[in-house]
Amino acid sequence: MRPSRSVTRLSAWAALALADGCGAGSQARCNNTVLATVMSPGVELKAVVFTRDCGGTTGSSTQVSVLPARASLRPGEGGNLFAAAGDHSAAASGPGGGPAVRLEWIGRNRLRLTYDRRARVLKAVRTIAAVKIEYAPSAGIPPAAEAASVR
Image (cartoon, one colour):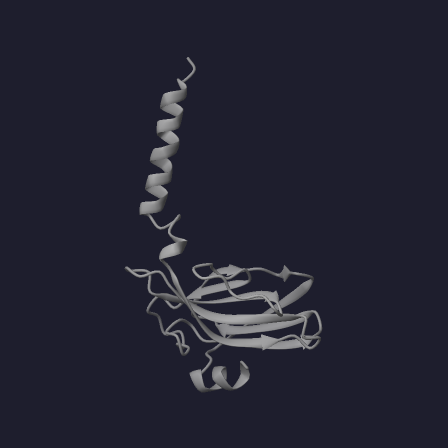
């Protein structure tokens, strides 16, 4: 027996409402605070480090996006490259409360991202906009070291 269209539409609306209530559709409710911007050697790209806070019990996360040099991070949008949460663990906290991250362009199209290995990595993309990403989990990044290396 085939479900009627009204039942199918009702199921779709219920799924969307449930997803929104669970945070899947709530990007507009999240706040991003830019911590640092690191320009690529050719100055055509930039890596943006920011904290993302969606309120409630989620806490803040540290995220990174690679963007064209003249583009801006869109309000409420998550990182397109990296995201990590501290989960109230022993991970070193960065300036925004999320896990500390250190970025270094090691070539025109190569970026090294160092993060505290105790952080819970939510997203880690290996290549974006023709840039290869090298991830380097470390035993801990003191906030002072992070601030000095991310320009």
